[in-house]
Image (cartoon, helix red, strand yellow):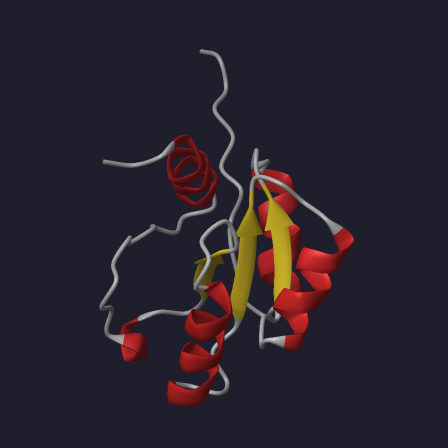
Length: 111
């Protein structure tokens, strides 16, 4: 079951025309960007493994509890960037654009 963090990220990505796949064993060749949960103890191992398996893959560190030390540690462990929940689609679009991943922000209009 999705956590509130996953649901928020899924919604923001969907509004940009992307999808979120939550998996412990993903096929890295099929993704444009990986998101790593900083709120789990083994995040350093996961970040290093992702960068080892696919060095050019952008990896975004995600947390519910931001802190300068945690973010710096994530970047030193291989993260390309980081973001904090709750997720805003515009913030995520800017982050993805900075990583070279196109996204189209979709707006719902009243009829």
